[in-house]
Length: 429
Ligand SMILES: *Cc1c(COP(=O)(O)O)cnc(C)c1O
Image 1 (cartoon, rainbow, N blue to C red):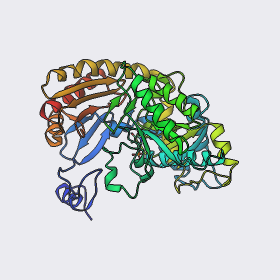
Image 2 (image 1 turned 90 degrees about the horizontal axis):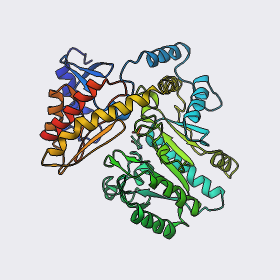
Image 3 (image 1 turned 120 degrees about the horizontal axis):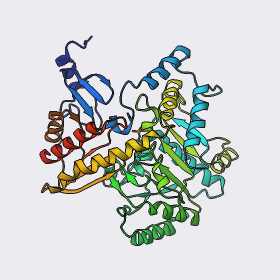
Image 4 (image 1 turned 135 degrees about the horizontal axis):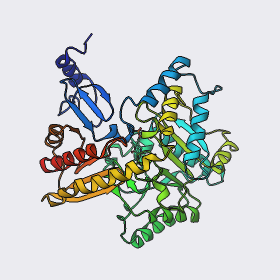
């Protein structure tokens, strides 16, 4: 067996046999071997330490080896790691459901635990179809989604991702065809034209549509695009006018990342019927997500033909994941995250400003603890990550974007170092 002492053999094996996300096999670039992580730092096999500017894809909001989350997992490990959720229940699941409902916008009291963000989106789509059917609207099985969206990698979730960025043509026969509205306008821009197009598309297809699906305010992996929060109110109105459910995917934006607990809370009159959460929910410790919905949705489905929501993963409500999520969400309760996210926003705004002077930079934008530098061309990922790593920071650019969403526990100095690395990566890439 390969041992941790022979890293070069281990990396050769990785290269030949192990898929990495959205990468060919073998990959074009060698991944960096991580041997330890604590606080906001990753330690590599060669002894180097990198500040994690990615929070492991939005999830490790409290960094690594946080004492409260470590302790919660140890404690649950002493009791049991997993039991099936069919016919059985346990305290971590019930407590977590109560916690999520208490943090969520009003009315989202019913909780379905899923094993990943993509699966929670699948569950949300299926719930919307079942809901419409039980309301006597069986022809409504399609979704109105937004250009530039990203909702996950399974087929149903992919079908509501941006058709071009999500390469729908590769899967043309396999994906259910959905209906798309334009990408919402940037903050402070007029929403008039967008609103008119959304209303038109909804009216044209309303006898086929089950729900509107959107990432509120920040479109993440579809292009790190920020949009005017008033668009959420418009989506709510359009959904109500056409008897559609409104599904908000807060998997990336939830738990404080944009400066409010959930991004949808930037628009006071835009509470969804269904909300998906994931990523930061377990503090990045374990894979888990959830679909929250209103009692109207849950009782309509439950009183219908199937008598249940037609989904039930093997590892539903995994107790270890629930324990990690209870601890991670528990760290949000004292509200101190808000000041940290605001401080991070200020440091990122200052620190990324020099990027606006680079010739090939199109846009620099910051919202909450999210900082984005958009280039006029595809990023040279090797050059950009190399420049960041040389500054002791881990970044993972994609497409034309060099971006960061630091762990909330970063000091202002650490956020400043990340911002410098983003600028250097943008200059190099
Ligand atoms: C990451 C992400 C997903 C998918 O979550 P996975 O856990 O990777 O399946 C869905 N929606 C949004 C907005 C995301 O950022």
